[in-house]
Image (cartoon, rainbow, N blue to C red):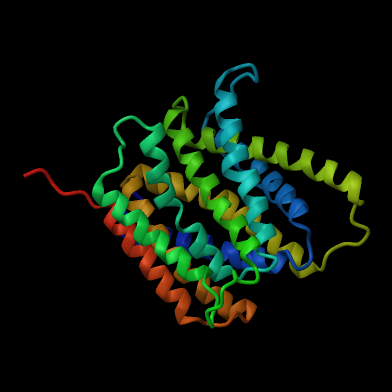
Amino acid sequence: MAHNKALFYAACLAIILIWGTAYTLVGFIVDSIEPAWMVAIRTTIAACVLSLYALWRGHRFPAFRDKTWRWYATMGFIGMALPFYLSAQGQIEVDSGLTSILVGVMPLITIVLAHFFVKGEHLTVRKTLGFFIGFAGIIYLFIPVPFKWEMVQNWQSQGLILVTALCYASMTIIAKRAPEIAPSLGAAMMVFSAAIFSVIYVLIYSWGTGFPQTMPPRSALIALLVLSLGATAIAQILYLRLIQISGPSFVSKLAYLVPVASIIAGIIYLDEVFSWRLVGAMLVIFVGLLIAKSEQKPG
């Protein structure tokens, strides 16, 4: 891939489509499978795949008493288990396109968190302006149409998805402070930990509410398998490889196209309604992100 441009751009397109359609798949799956079970199955399958990949790369998991596990288990919980569940719970009422836009504010939240927790990443006037412009895009999504002095009907679900973005942003801050290990091994440790947390939660949850009595439709199971292998496992491997080749800055720009792919996929596969309001909010958030991330070059 490093020496084949066609393969490199194919990988870029693949990761955009995988990330974008992930929200479409979740929106389809939650109609038949409870979010807790969906996340447990999703992370367990991905943990098996990524663990085998790390072993194939010649890596070995550290002993469980090693402090590295505390860092990557925390990232597995905050960056995978918890946001996967919150996002799925929110998507019971929220369209996949809107979900991708709300999650897309993660870089703006990261900029604010970095000011407090990362040395040398202080807020500047430009970053602050970009954050408030992006925040205006979020407010625009929440305002009812036609305007009324009340919140939109599903604001709680949208709030869960915003917390998902906060989780992802927090995970990036923790990742900057975590011990450095091979990316493939770190990814495997994260999703392995996420699977443990998710399985424990779904067992406790089902003990109180009851275990499923019937099998979900085959289409939902296939979609869950695709989600587990694609967005949770294969995308992680592609993501790590692209970072090795082109660096994190280039890969982060690919995320700008994810909401576009998600909106299109939602319209095609879930019969979601196209809305210029979504496009407008996405552009406002995008402009805020560009302003926040652009820095004046020293004279």
